[in-house]
Length: 94
Image (cartoon, rainbow, N blue to C red):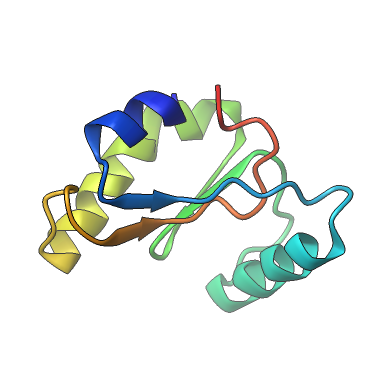
């Protein structure tokens, strides 16, 4: 799913971070979740702007619309700079 979105929105910065065995990424995930008020975050998790999607149901159903919403806020068309950050995703590159 992320691969097809990367092709569709080449200007979006997708970051896939492994958090189980990487304390630096885990700290980043914890910090972002705390900042966004997320309690009980899980894996997979995707953060796009202030939108947090958790789980195998919400991510496929809502990720592209979250990206489009963030692009509208930033005035980007997805071909230029914007950021979609999945800080606690271990398998989002499917």
